[in-house]
Image (tube, rainbow, N blue to C red):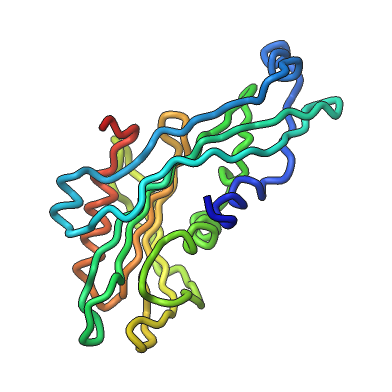
Length: 222
């Protein structure tokens, strides 16, 4: 796991739980509290249709310490999944890896009705800023992110809000606009983040990212 990915969950500071009979085992237990996410990813058919190729699929375990009432500390282990796909696109007369899509699943870490997941309360823009560095591409760092619009998509059996952002970046020596689409929501006990990025002028990639989002499976069964 890269340092930036580790910081996503480590940067939640300290969680606090209400002490009830239902969480006595949590307080008194000796071993770490373990939470495992299920992988989220586009279908193979959607990947083939849109031309995206698998770049990296991995599960990583992070550890952090939470403080319970009375100053009791417990270790938490959380396993997250990250599935990344990229696509070579033609831009400025060159072919480069300029489009990417990622699906990330993080366990909700629910205890006594409360979540220990420090990302659960973040807005889509805040999630975008945290995860953007994890998406491989040939364009440079994206700056001046602004929110353009929001719209709805049917994903995993429910309507989800997708936010569209635009930023400035360099690709093949040319400075241009990069469009990013992100949605995040809870599903089957996990926080899911789906993110696509591509040069804004490539309007076909906008539809492709939406197709990948709509096809998402969670948990992935194969």
